[in-house]
Length: 200
Image 1 (spheres, rainbow, N blue to C red):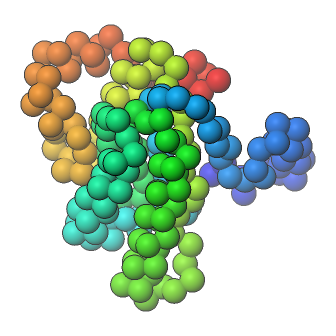
Image 2 (cartoon, one colour):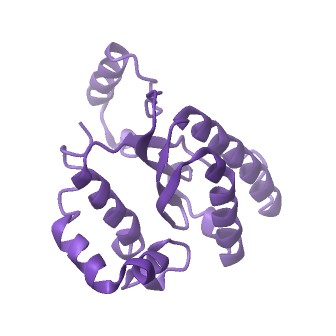
């Protein structure tokens, strides 16, 4: 709810009432601990989308390495990821989504302390809660993968996937070939991603 402050009091009250009825947290994304092995798109952002991860290229590189190292033991597969200056997305398969969230919470806590010390901003809120979205179909999976790899292009950082260094896109293209990647892009477009079919 990044537009919360732009809503009037009545609109805010309606949203809060709906969240109470569904037993969701007031302002945080809900979490669903599903048993068994599943695929998830996990996203997390800096508070109010401030460019804190991207303070320096080295910080980006270090955080990317820490993110992958921390969750790899809990995941059967890490399919794709993309790290931007103020948020990240990672597509995984795991049977321990609750533990993955807990590990990310520890990572966020460590980096908050470290970065606030480096930036001389003790007390600054660095992270907003992470959100995991269950992958519901083959279409949802490939559209999610395209969405993750396209994110730096979408936000205007690069013109081509493979030009963004903090992403799995270049390795994905090298492994699968440009023809296959282009076919997947055409077959599973992201034009309507987030419009209902992938979030209901």
